[in-house]
Image (tube, rainbow, N blue to C red; front, top):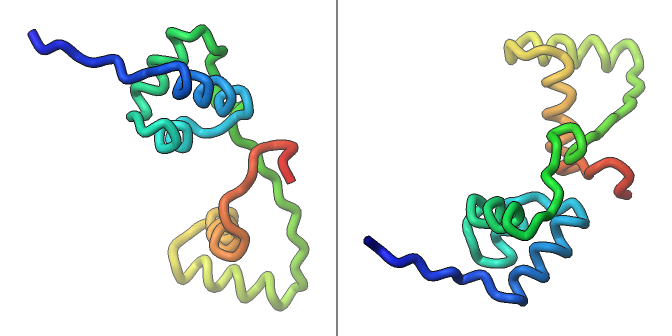
Length: 106
């Protein structure tokens, strides 16, 4: 039997608690505490931190207005890529603006 070392210490637990309650992503927390995402999830459960539901973690909304000529051009481009219009617009926004932020963040 292999004995596993528990590398979780008070400093790492404090970071986990703070970042979890701020709503940080599991992967970001894992990088910060230099542990695996699975280990972060296990320790979160051990510490009794509340689990997250998928609909609480990320939300983003975007309202975009196009003129008719631009809309037609974008439809042709989406069709040429065999993509739906919403996914094509989302790809353009992600390319130009970066990742969406969580709800309420500026």
